[in-house]
Amino acid sequence: MTESRKKLVELKNLKKHFPIKSSFLKKGTQVVKAVDDVSFHIYKGETFGLVGESGCGKSTLGRTLNRLYDATAGEILFDGKDIANLTNKELQPYRKRMQMIFQDPYSSLNPYMNVEEIIDEPLEIHTNLSKNDRKKIIIDILEKVGLKKDDMGKFPHEFSGGQRQRIGIARALSINPDFIICDEAISALDVSIQAQVINMLEDLQEEMNLTYLFVAHDLSMVRHISDRIGVMYLGKMVEISKSDELYNRPLHPYTQALLSAIPIPDPIKAQNSKREIISGELPSPIEMETGCRFRSRCPFAKSICAEIDPELKQVDDEHLVACHLY
Ligand code: SF4
Image (cartoon, rainbow, N blue to C red):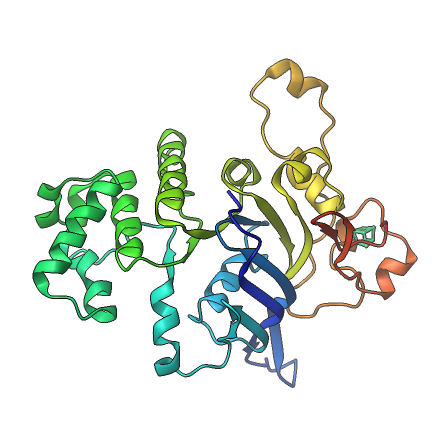
């Protein structure tokens, strides 16, 4: 799927911190470090999976990359241009090239707009096309996502969950973007529908030359679609690897625990498999201590882990890990 090694997106030391009000007992400003010094890149034409437990910062990272949130610090290079501090006006041409598909297709679609109006909205904002030309694009994109011309006059409540997600995908694709952030885009769907939507996203990627950031909490879900995968833990990237390599040779203790939590459908294999259960306390994202953030839950923690935060370093071709064991 990686058509060329050109980087479309590159994040350098990206931070997104949310200040929170100090309480009566705790004076001074406190911050939640939702994304804390994260660097990685996404090649043009590839699918980069981003995984981690709920609250690890992966959705915040997607929204900061897309400039729905302003970054606290760091660079967001899109096609070589740092867009982290651009004004809304300067951002306009980049917004057209980056679109988002959200988790809940029902709440992300305006219930008072019909399908034609929903898909027409970004076309009207980002293009100078006539109503007639926009209508032709809407009919074409509906066909691409497996819906019909007759669906244009219907409203979101008249569709199933899977069909509503197809409308959300059609809306994102209507302005012919280069980059799509799929933010838990299939998590709310039934397993059988998830497979259909994933297959459709792969076909569309090939046909429209798309690059995806696929955010999900479930590692089994991203395996099929991703070329490379990044694993996040409490605002930090702890491992990045090609997809197959990550499943066959996970290095970070957190990745190993996440993988062993994936249910095994074969009961005999499941009985014989050794499961790493993550135990220990999850540190507060507000008062982050020094050292490795995973150490209170890590079975391999040693003294250096309490003192020095391990840096993400390359251990093999395209395989990076942030752990003092390597
Ligand atoms: Fe465990 Fe230490 Fe590695 Fe952190 S740095 S994952 S505590 S071994």
